[in-house]
Image (cartoon, rainbow, N blue to C red; front, side):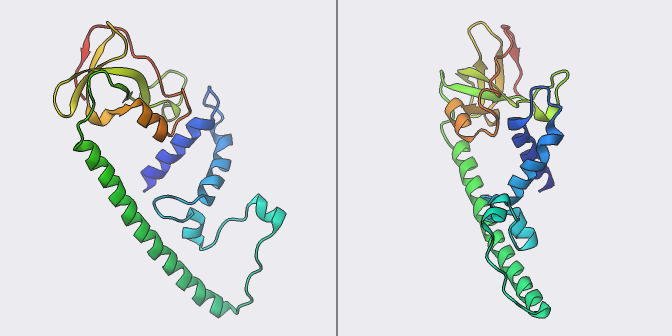
Length: 205
């Protein structure tokens, strides 16, 4: 869970940091506010509601007000709050199970599909480190590439432009251009880089 949360932070900071990557700490608080107040697909709840049992007070609440709280004794309020948290956590567990099933279905569909055809335009997952840039805030996808040869069900030979280096890569590191644009967590255009020019082949990884 912690690793996934950190990955989410990295993905969203890539969208808003300046090109020098040195202002990420200034962008972080507003992102965290938005994250904690947003409903998550996997749980169907906001992190604030899941942890504290209530939603955050936002700027719109200051402008338009919030519904008044019920007048309850401390004992009654505490008992109701515990029941409320139990209901919230049960709801989140059900949604997590549904989300897990959806992810498995999507992965199995790709694994059992016909894969990619020769001539398909794809991007390659290939995290790189560039001098003077934060590794976590750099783009992870590069391309576009053309599928040159399908070696077997899960291994492909790809190439960026004619006479450039051919790469032999696993299916899991490829994504169709349209699929990537629809599901990308990066800024538009930031994750599309042209590969090096060479006639050598890179082994599958």
